[in-house]
Image 1: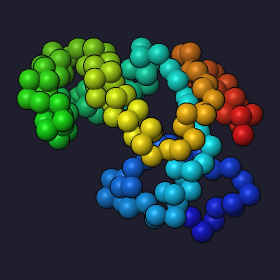
Image 2 (image 1 turned 90 degrees about the horizontal axis):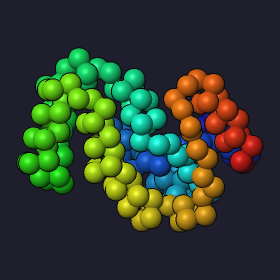
Image 3 (image 1 turned 45 degrees about the vertical axis):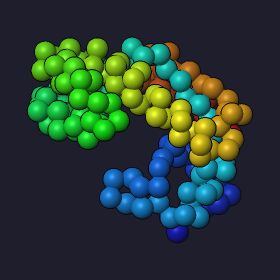
Length: 147
Protein backbone atom coordinates (compact mmCIF):
# COMPACT_ATOMS: atom_id res chain seq x y z
CA UNK A 1 0.00 0.00 0.00
CA UNK A 2 2.85 2.38 0.70
CA UNK A 3 3.93 2.18 -2.94
CA UNK A 4 0.60 3.34 -4.36
CA UNK A 5 0.75 6.67 -6.15
CA UNK A 6 -2.40 8.60 -5.12
CA UNK A 7 -2.22 10.57 -8.38
CA UNK A 8 -2.77 7.41 -10.45
CA UNK A 9 -6.03 5.47 -10.65
CA UNK A 10 -6.19 2.19 -8.79
CA UNK A 11 -8.77 -0.39 -9.80
CA UNK A 12 -10.24 -2.57 -7.08
CA UNK A 13 -13.05 -5.07 -7.05
CA UNK A 14 -15.92 -4.37 -4.73
CA UNK A 15 -14.75 -6.03 -1.54
CA UNK A 16 -15.90 -6.46 2.01
CA UNK A 17 -13.93 -5.46 5.08
CA UNK A 18 -12.42 -8.91 5.27
CA UNK A 19 -10.79 -10.61 2.29
CA UNK A 20 -9.93 -14.16 3.28
CA UNK A 21 -8.02 -13.79 6.53
CA UNK A 22 -6.94 -10.21 5.81
CA UNK A 23 -8.62 -7.10 7.17
CA UNK A 24 -8.86 -4.10 4.82
CA UNK A 25 -7.62 -0.93 6.55
CA UNK A 26 -10.58 1.35 7.36
CA UNK A 27 -9.09 4.38 5.57
CA UNK A 28 -8.58 2.35 2.37
CA UNK A 29 -12.04 0.83 2.61
CA UNK A 30 -13.61 4.28 3.05
CA UNK A 31 -11.78 5.61 -0.04
CA UNK A 32 -12.80 2.57 -2.06
CA UNK A 33 -16.44 2.96 -1.09
CA UNK A 34 -16.54 6.69 -1.86
CA UNK A 35 -14.73 6.42 -5.21
CA UNK A 36 -16.15 6.45 -8.71
CA UNK A 37 -17.41 3.07 -9.86
CA UNK A 38 -17.43 1.15 -13.12
CA UNK A 39 -19.85 -1.70 -13.66
CA UNK A 40 -18.35 -4.57 -15.66
CA UNK A 41 -21.15 -6.65 -17.10
CA UNK A 42 -21.26 -10.01 -18.88
CA UNK A 43 -24.05 -12.40 -19.75
CA UNK A 44 -24.43 -15.46 -17.53
CA UNK A 45 -22.94 -17.90 -20.12
CA UNK A 46 -19.83 -15.72 -20.48
CA UNK A 47 -19.43 -15.51 -16.71
CA UNK A 48 -19.94 -19.28 -16.39
CA UNK A 49 -17.15 -19.89 -18.92
CA UNK A 50 -14.77 -17.58 -17.04
CA UNK A 51 -15.61 -19.01 -13.62
CA UNK A 52 -15.24 -22.61 -14.78
CA UNK A 53 -11.66 -21.76 -15.68
CA UNK A 54 -10.98 -19.80 -12.49
CA UNK A 55 -12.38 -22.51 -10.23
CA UNK A 56 -11.39 -25.60 -12.21
CA UNK A 57 -10.07 -27.27 -9.05
CA UNK A 58 -13.67 -27.73 -7.89
CA UNK A 59 -14.55 -29.60 -11.08
CA UNK A 60 -11.98 -32.21 -10.12
CA UNK A 61 -13.19 -32.37 -6.50
CA UNK A 62 -16.96 -31.99 -6.05
CA UNK A 63 -16.63 -32.96 -2.37
CA UNK A 64 -14.42 -29.92 -1.72
CA UNK A 65 -17.01 -27.75 -3.45
CA UNK A 66 -19.66 -29.36 -1.27
CA UNK A 67 -17.80 -28.24 1.85
CA UNK A 68 -17.69 -24.67 0.52
CA UNK A 69 -21.40 -24.81 -0.30
CA UNK A 70 -22.11 -25.90 3.28
CA UNK A 71 -20.96 -22.44 4.38
CA UNK A 72 -24.08 -21.08 2.66
CA UNK A 73 -26.54 -23.31 4.57
CA UNK A 74 -27.79 -20.52 6.80
CA UNK A 75 -28.35 -18.19 3.86
CA UNK A 76 -29.68 -20.59 1.22
CA UNK A 77 -31.21 -23.45 3.21
CA UNK A 78 -30.51 -27.18 3.15
CA UNK A 79 -32.72 -27.98 0.15
CA UNK A 80 -30.91 -25.48 -2.09
CA UNK A 81 -27.45 -26.59 -0.93
CA UNK A 82 -28.32 -30.25 -1.55
CA UNK A 83 -29.65 -29.37 -5.01
CA UNK A 84 -26.39 -27.58 -5.83
CA UNK A 85 -24.33 -30.52 -4.53
CA UNK A 86 -26.38 -32.86 -6.72
CA UNK A 87 -25.59 -30.72 -9.77
CA UNK A 88 -21.88 -30.85 -8.87
CA UNK A 89 -21.86 -34.62 -8.42
CA UNK A 90 -23.72 -35.03 -11.73
CA UNK A 91 -21.10 -32.88 -13.48
CA UNK A 92 -23.69 -30.29 -14.49
CA UNK A 93 -21.19 -27.48 -14.00
CA UNK A 94 -22.65 -24.83 -16.27
CA UNK A 95 -26.06 -25.17 -14.63
CA UNK A 96 -24.52 -25.11 -11.15
CA UNK A 97 -22.40 -22.03 -11.77
CA UNK A 98 -25.32 -20.20 -13.41
CA UNK A 99 -27.57 -20.99 -10.43
CA UNK A 100 -24.93 -19.86 -7.94
CA UNK A 101 -24.61 -16.58 -9.81
CA UNK A 102 -28.34 -15.97 -10.18
CA UNK A 103 -29.57 -17.21 -6.80
CA UNK A 104 -26.68 -16.33 -4.50
CA UNK A 105 -23.80 -14.22 -5.77
CA UNK A 106 -25.60 -11.57 -7.82
CA UNK A 107 -28.28 -10.77 -5.21
CA UNK A 108 -25.65 -10.54 -2.44
CA UNK A 109 -23.39 -8.39 -4.60
CA UNK A 110 -26.24 -6.06 -5.55
CA UNK A 111 -27.23 -5.60 -1.90
CA UNK A 112 -23.62 -4.87 -0.93
CA UNK A 113 -23.16 -2.30 -3.70
CA UNK A 114 -26.29 -0.43 -2.74
CA UNK A 115 -25.39 -0.47 0.94
CA UNK A 116 -21.67 0.31 0.73
CA UNK A 117 -20.74 2.11 -2.49
CA UNK A 118 -22.14 5.62 -2.61
CA UNK A 119 -21.37 6.18 -6.30
CA UNK A 120 -22.50 2.80 -7.62
CA UNK A 121 -25.75 4.28 -8.94
CA UNK A 122 -23.71 6.55 -11.22
CA UNK A 123 -21.47 3.78 -12.55
CA UNK A 124 -20.81 3.55 -16.27
CA UNK A 125 -21.45 0.01 -17.52
CA UNK A 126 -18.94 -1.75 -19.78
CA UNK A 127 -19.88 -5.13 -21.24
CA UNK A 128 -17.74 -8.19 -21.84
CA UNK A 129 -19.37 -9.96 -24.79
CA UNK A 130 -17.23 -13.13 -24.80
CA UNK A 131 -14.63 -14.77 -22.58
CA UNK A 132 -11.93 -14.55 -25.25
CA UNK A 133 -8.58 -12.97 -24.50
CA UNK A 134 -9.09 -10.42 -27.29
CA UNK A 135 -12.43 -9.33 -25.84
CA UNK A 136 -10.94 -9.04 -22.35
CA UNK A 137 -8.08 -6.91 -23.70
CA UNK A 138 -10.58 -4.63 -25.42
CA UNK A 139 -12.56 -4.34 -22.18
CA UNK A 140 -9.33 -3.41 -20.36
CA UNK A 141 -8.76 -0.65 -22.93
CA UNK A 142 -12.32 0.60 -22.38
CA UNK A 143 -11.72 0.66 -18.62
CA UNK A 144 -8.55 2.68 -19.18
CA UNK A 145 -10.46 5.19 -21.31
CA UNK A 146 -13.23 5.47 -18.72
CA UNK A 147 -10.99 7.04 -16.07
